[in-house]
Length: 434
Ligand code: CMP
Image (cartoon, rainbow, N blue to C red; front, side, top):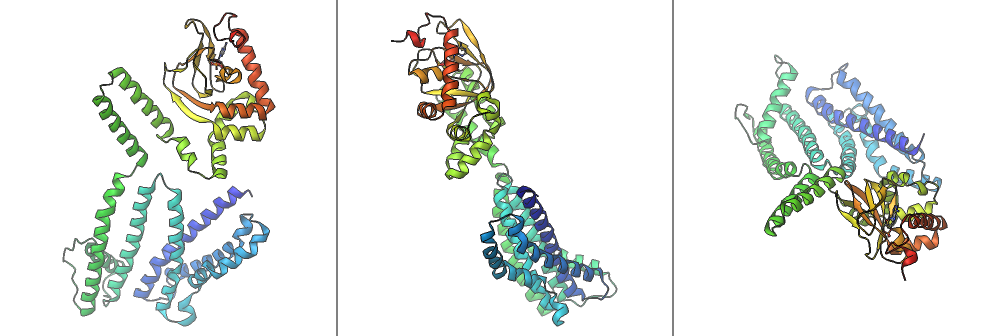
């Protein structure tokens, strides 16, 4: 089994354990209130969960092996688990009621909920894009569970009526609890005994906290439900105000809008370079290689290239976008970058601005002649549609030429071929430049 498959399997297992822990947190208080009736399905469920939690301890001990950790670390990892979470898991696994005959001791098994909290915490880090939805679901989860516990507490303070089904009485208690917690308080269910009155006051105070949390957070959560979109919309608003204030002509305004819309549709408006620059070097290399994998596969000469060259290019290539009609390179200007086409079409136009040397597409590159021969651009290059390009600066280009012979040979051959296609009297042809 591959490492990725093992991780997926462990995640599924953790999910199963989390669901079981939640069900246990529901059934134990119910059994405490209704009594541990022999032969009840709740009891069978209790034993099933006990077995599952016991297996979970074994899974955690075997976890380093499954994840193919270093053999030298196996002992330390197992010992760490047994001294930390292992204890929590053991407390949650033991059937306390059956061992000591004290029903309340079964509440110790709630320790497993700490695992659920840990799991939710881990999932939160992985769910950045859906963070608000995730936070909302987490709130609903804990609110639901707390309401259930408080409803069981309310039931415990009552003498259960024998003429009404247990389910109806539980629903009645839950109804009281939700109306009190949310500060709605219809007043149709009221406390009668002293204990109930004290309990109601506690729940009312808790209710104020819950209400404050809901008002303070839910509005904020809903407003940020799609952070990327909110960022895009605020950028567009700022742009509109700026362009109106500076009287930018409408056609140019349209091109600016089109550019941002393209960025939003293709990259959710994220600046790849900025995200990468915040990562530590090893992670940056890995993520860069992954992000540029599709592009690297399109460039024919990189297919057989060494890993070092590909890694260096992946780290140094910077993404840029040009809109249709943009001049990317002007004949005669000084060249500081060369360009690789990730997606799009460009046309190469001679210095006379009439002759078209050809069109270049995905996987092609241009702008190498000026860097190779340290001379002005020999032609202009114009974007024919939206072009996703990667630029390579002159220093990295020169370094790659001196370090990787395959890169140097390919660049020189291509430059040579392109030069030969240019007319002999072309103003910036390398052999005509003094
Ligand atoms: P450079 O001179 O730096 O800038 C213009 C680029 O156009 C040039 O590098 C080449 O990459 C490219 N180019 C020049 N001539 C041709 C051609 N005949 N066919 C394709 N591309 C060309």
